[in-house]
Image 1 (cartoon, rainbow, N blue to C red):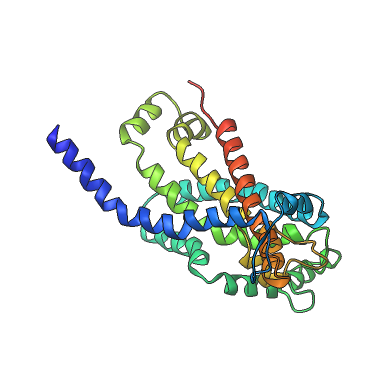
Image 2: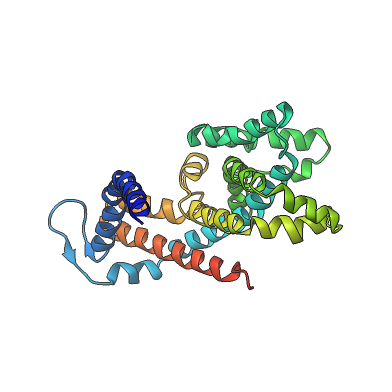
Length: 290
């Protein structure tokens, strides 16, 4: 009993610095942001209390709804794209040999690159005149498919989602490989004896064993997509005509471009609420029944 108490005390003491840092640099700023969301404030002078007026203006702004729609598209593309691709690559690259380690490093590489570099690379790939994508389409006889990928409002948000997904598959690959390696060899042997091979093993053995990790990766996809900012700012700046505007860029433009700090705080609070709603919905939909 005394040993268990000492262990718990040591763990709590070890976690205390991290908890304090998180409290000071994350939780308290969020609370302050929620507080200023009820004020009309330009960043200087005394803030003026206006209640829920910032939220009312936000809900009446069509640009906000366009940004929300674009963010939901990013969330859907991340869940449909990042999670299955990362899981498939994890299954293919599970064996720890030299070739697989090279491929893992290549897949993870975009994550360690600066988002500015990733945005610039894909901006050149999508360039309508000198872009690699249009040149590739022309070389295989698909000239009719070439277009200004980042300027066409019908497709630019989907074009933007591809580099975002490409840059974020790496961490999920590592997570899934770690989860797959933690599956006991006895479980795999028993599944093989019972005739569970191929897709049967994947859906009836492997996925149930790592399902909690799948749920976690979906949560990370949701939160990451809702705070997407850098790639869009570099590639399109939210344009043209706000066609690639996201909630983060909408908040940034209102806060630091037109100096509506109170309104920007309200938008940031709304992002947190939307994120919590989607994560809660994810847990409801992915909850396993006994």
